[in-house]
Image (tube, rainbow, N blue to C red):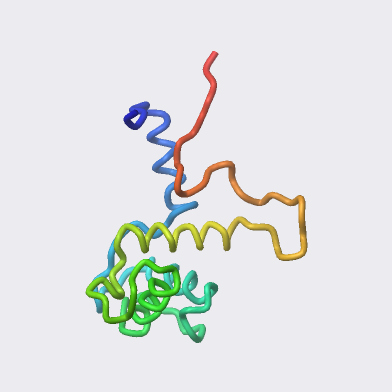
Length: 131
């Protein structure tokens, strides 16, 4: 089954993408982009980026944090892997999943509370009803 080609649905997807899955591209070392700060904050919350001096440059510290994240989540086998520190599809998906859970999960110890939108970043398909 192919993707639904509905203009309204595609518009909604485009608007939701930055909210539920903001990390959508690779950064080259030394590249400056405001999304690098989001990346660093996600990595920090997951315990892979130390300190709180976030910046918009994809530098060695961020690349090393991405590599540690990749090894811990078994995206790569070791920091010597040729894909270490590269934001490929699997890494971006895992980071967006972490971001989503950080943003929309209920605080620890609170049950029965839902803060999440009804859309998961891995499944930006919406069901809507027409008359």
